[in-house]
Length: 238
Image (cartoon, rainbow, N blue to C red; front, side):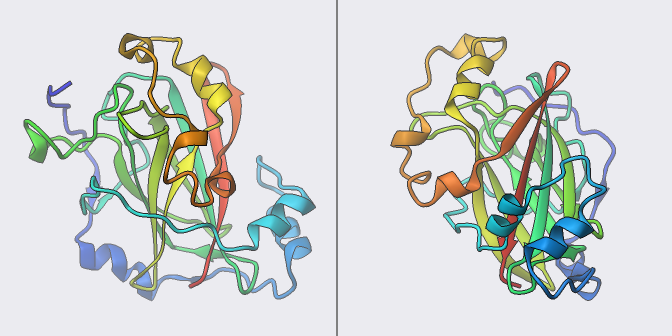
């Protein structure tokens, strides 16, 4: 688990540049009227939202600890796997301004999570050269950021999760964690390489961070061939 992963070509920005998207960070469309108009604006999206889910999205997403494994790499890239094994996972993270119920364009969405064996890059042997499962994407005009990753593994004391930060106009406007339904995780973990690790110790129901509003940060997941697509709309106060 301590072997180094190859570092693929990518585009890096300094922390100042990443947060300096600030100058470009803006609300793409002022919908000025709530969930109904949000739905209209996103109608062409493959993951079409319902009136109920859009209305729910126009609320603040729960904030929780960033945890001990954050590394400010400033690595702008869609594919964060670096060849690591695991069941492919596409993430679709939409960011909206809760006060206007409108998408935020050019927000920097920063994610990091454990690999299939429960290991975080940037820690342990060869830490400085290991950057798998970390990356940043800017949101498009519909507030959407996309990532290619793998289904995360587990480690002692925590349920399966993905960490996320959102930067808008040079400020961190959200720090949170995204979660997976336990029933799906159980199915995924019966497959290799996850099955090598044995039974996980913590589920959503007994995770101390999930207890802080985790149900509102559950990803919506669907099968896409041999992969999964996880989607969520996060409301932030910019």
